[in-house]
Amino acid sequence: MKFLKNRAWLVVCALILFGTLPALAQTRPAVNLDLRQIMAAPQFSNSVQLIIALSMISLVPFFLISVTAFLRIIIVFSLLRTAIGTQQIPPNTVVISLALFMTVFVMSPVWQEVNTKALTPYNEGKISMPKAVEIGMKPLNQFMLRQTREKDLALFVQFAKIPIPKTPEQVPSYVLIPAFMISELKTAFQIGFLLFIPFIIIDLVVSNILLSLGMFMLSPVMISLPFKILLFVLVDGWGLIIRGLLMSFR
Image 1 (tube, one colour):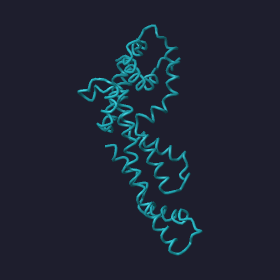
Image 2 (spheres, one colour):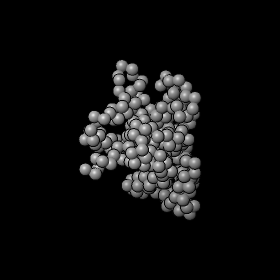
Image 3 (cartoon, helix red, strand yellow):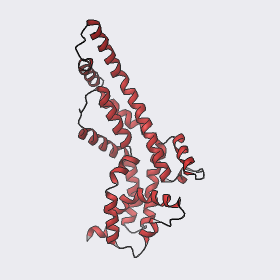
Image 4 (cartoon, rainbow, N blue to C red):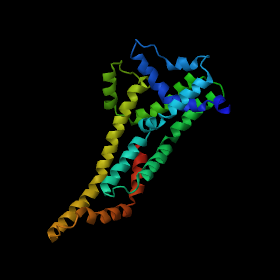
């Protein structure tokens, strides 16, 4: 079958798994497990590789959230919707779709580098799968390192009980990924805090006006919602937020 001959899907799905699992296996000397050697074995048939690839595909959404720009983007969009008070508008499908396409846009230079340096040479038979995985992990690790705070990285290096890396390339993937996720969460909440400030001011102004007029039966949230939407539209809120998110990844 053509699909069995072309094992490009295996490289894409194994980039992250093979970058993390071998390092985790090394932390337990009692277990002799090296997935790269197993996959490189000549007797490892195409059928078994296909089964492993299909199993890895089910884990792709978790890695998409963990090691890309998706985490920061989706949290900012969710906090924005909460700050405005529109509840389920835009719908979850729209928010997730926009976050997904923005992730593709932000990560496209990384994927292009992976395709040029790892996937294409592997398809042409110039390099082996373990070598393709090793080369393909480097651009992804560099992206995560640029977005990771030194404090968060030092935290996981300390608890992993490994020697302090002298260069960024020496940081194991199983240490880098959780540090990257914590840094992304902190950055997303910082952006969300700034988004809440103008909408909270509108809520306070509307609440004070209704209180001074004695309109206790009216909900301040319902009255302030149109003004918050109007403010968001007048200042081109979506354009400002998208611009800010894109600039935050430089």
